[in-house]
Amino acid sequence: MLLTLHSSNELPTLITSPYGEGFVLRKAVTVCGYILAVFLAGPALADAPKRVVSSDWQISQAWAAARATLPTALGATEKRYGWFSPSLALKVALPVEDPDVQAEMIWVDRIRRNGTMFEARLAGYPHHMPAMRMGDTVGFFYDQIADWAVQAVDGRFYGYYTTRVLIKSMDPERAAKYQATLVNNPLPPGWRFNPEK
Image (cartoon, rainbow, N blue to C red; front, side, top):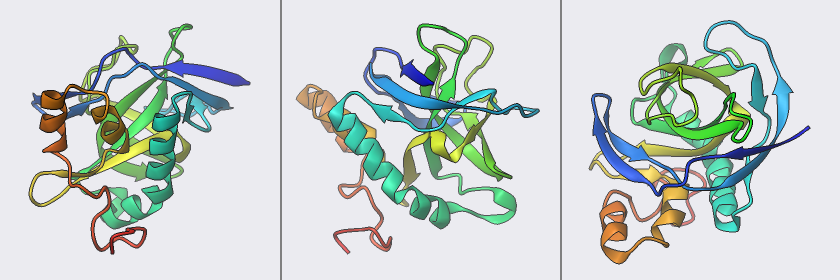
């Protein structure tokens, strides 16, 4: 079954919250995915997209680049007992009950691997999940991950592939604010997929 997923219609917003500072990315995109039906207890999802792509060519390319390096990002940040470094954030497609939207693209942090799933805390304000709040725990599968970000020691970020695309369409003053939060190369110097290595 083919599924059309949408996110909200705003550009990214840099926020400071009780959970830290970071991006809440909001841009109108159409996302397609195939449904994988699973019925698990706890924060697990009943209908999880199996694949995430965008009708926006640049966003689709950004997601492809992020997913190509995702195994390295996860491997570099995984710690003990399935937990990942607190510097890691992931952008995931979470199914929602809204028939017009069906899924929300949202950033998560405090990530932990739990069997074949991941559990994480919502790092943004959900727009299409009325029962959920920023900071609530959600479950998702690897194939639901569309983007990643890792905070560097200087406070700027690697990754954020979609943000790097969205910056190009912002006014220069706003783009400069976002660009200042990003390391020029989206990959840390020691990572194996880094073309500047």
